[in-house]
Image (cartoon, rainbow, N blue to C red; front, side):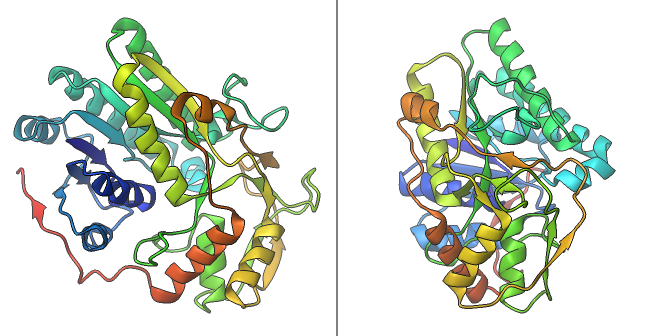
Length: 346
């Protein structure tokens, strides 16, 4: 049985779907602060399977102990965390409390119950502003915002843990930029309020929900002046977690891998690709750079292929097509009337 923290979120829900399809038993723990139970209801309908869903916070030690007592958990996939770069600059203490304290509490309880297999949702932000691209896992780390710092702190904690107790099996998955949606159009990215990420904002502009896209800076040292990122389809990313779980079955210690495509695309390239996929014009305005942003960031994905046997398969056209399908079918996001059965451990 796999415990998925933050399993109702964007990446978490897609990973739950892939886990269920591979006949894993899944328990989801989520406080739904930036996700909705509807996503899990739809995952169950798509797969024709059931998950156990518990509403709660990963910092709640007593709740975690009840979960590990009630279920025979074999491994944890840890997504639970706050993730907006700009918000982290404005509210750093909230990010350190949620992301770092939550991760430590979870791991302490795992150790109490002898569960020592963990896949951690890290981020390419741990590389800061890299001296060169593509980025390899052995590049220097150093962050430019509290969100990235919180991820890097947790990575360091987990490395220290594995040194202290070599029986731990931990995968640190450094995501680049997840985009897209499940090909069914039934689950996708549904941010609260104004989107912080590029793709959902573009999709909302295309659907008429927002008037225009703000492009934060056009004076970077990139081919067209706009920021370049390694966009990865969320389905490919979800499959990377299953590959990591498999790889950890016979390998103690820590695996650190990039999950990206190895190709960088600029903001203007993404706008053009989305216009082609949707048939809609995306009006945009150039705005000043945001604090903490960098010019270019894309992966060297070779190590993931070597250690996990995993490669991204879906390109930018599929990313935009699936994101537009999700947005078209769900113009206001998830409906709160769709619910899954939640268990209470109060």
